[in-house]
Length: 103
Image (cartoon, rainbow, N blue to C red; front, side):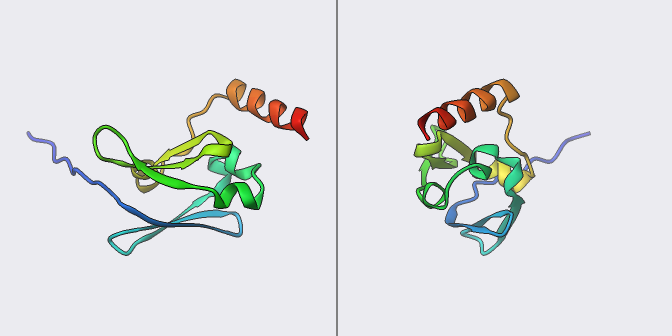
């Protein structure tokens, strides 16, 4: 028996935030909506921080969304497959505490 695989390279065209969702438009015309709660750093970000994103390609040519101010990386394929953040609670708690210390 063989297993079919699909080599998908979604290309990000636009990013927006709609209510409690992260909205990502990809080049094939689809718009992906995922709960912002899946990405706690984005959830706790200011509007200005959320708007400050860019796309870069990893070594294998896959699009990665990057919010430098938040040190948040989200592979486009993770959005397409429905994978939330894999950041540990310990890492996120440390990051959030460092933000509170600056305020």
